[in-house]
Length: 263
Image 1: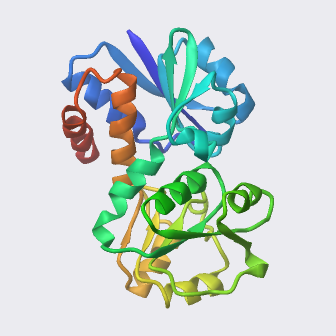
Image 2: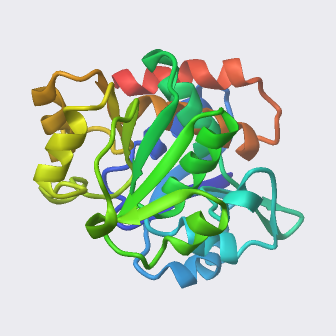
């Protein structure tokens, strides 16, 4: 039996085990998928091999740490410098990022988007910013502190901390922070968020499965919005395809994985 897992902190909320185990069950694959709570991201590689895993997903806050611990990084993850999918290949740890494509799939329903404001500066923000730019959408990054902004400025993005930022109209506001995941916090100060929402056309929170304070404010504003469920599904299908070495089509994987959201 092949064993897979998801690494994160927190991770108890993750739907990934249900999603991937549904695929394994329907496709008659001898495999199982579990959660792995990990507080120290630097130990990810050691834990991966200690558990005898064939692959894993990585969620906040360890995507950048995962990138550092791979033997090889492929695709857009090399640019993003953040990994959310790990596959064991000939004894080596291979890193990918499926967040970018998953996100672009999820925002199609918003219609044409010219620019977007990305809240946060972690691994997810990196993936989405690169994906947006490749999709000819101009991203601006806004973070509490300047600590993680060097990557974005080096890539040519406009990046600001709260105190240096002036609100402007955006077609889409994207929360990539963990605010609201295990607390009742907003990703940015309420007054600033209210002003941004009054000038925005839509918003999305990458957190799924709960109505975060961010989503509550969006609902009050009346803007079109989404949580992270569509992105989760799209990136999960791509991750499962990698786990299974391309033995099954994306369509064959998507059907049972999508069904898992109703369970």
